[in-house]
Length: 300
Image (cartoon, rainbow, N blue to C red):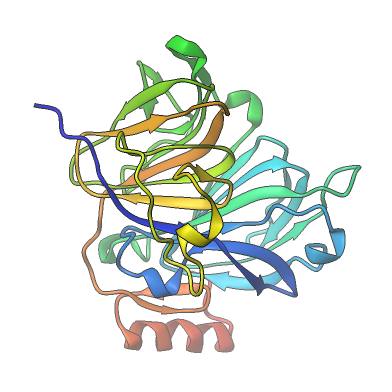
């Protein structure tokens, strides 16, 4: 018997400033731990104002996590303590496993029109993998397959599998799925999900419904109530839906299409000790990490 995932909570992304003054919107983060286990944070850094992103994210350390950067438009220059340098450009993905430690920088440059659009997701690592060797999976836009289903539903597969087509990112500890899904107007789609895994959708364009009843929800954002914002319960750009358990999610559109990121992963169910760019299991491990960073022994 199929079990549809009901909506657990609905969030509206909130403006924050990070790095050296980058204006972005945070869909979830520290205050939602462990609600999204194994995921820690999702940042939306779409902007048409170069002054809001050009200062970027200068050199900083990471340990104990993975950072996943998906660029829709523009260019992000990156470099790290191991001598790696490169660009993540329109449609590209960088899946960085920081593991035992990486010191790097990420500098958004935008496109010729000054637009910078992308997302960064942080995924936790279990204790047994927190000190694994760092690695990158750099994926070009041309390497990301798109599957077109019935009714014109398009799915870009970054990680995971749809109808026998697998995404290029593989061998990730939390067994994730990361899809970029577009559903046309007047269409219903039910996407299978693995029971027991955490699943969320983040709307990046258009609007749609994530439950057959099309009922309204109160956003989990301070001072923002659904009824103050719109008359119908369609969820739109910048809205995140966290699902309860089940074996599929439901998506329906009316007069407009919807585009959203669909992400899932296996919960770790371990203590989280988190300060800044480092996430461990205990405060003592955090202290060791920052002490090593100060002493110059952070990189293994």
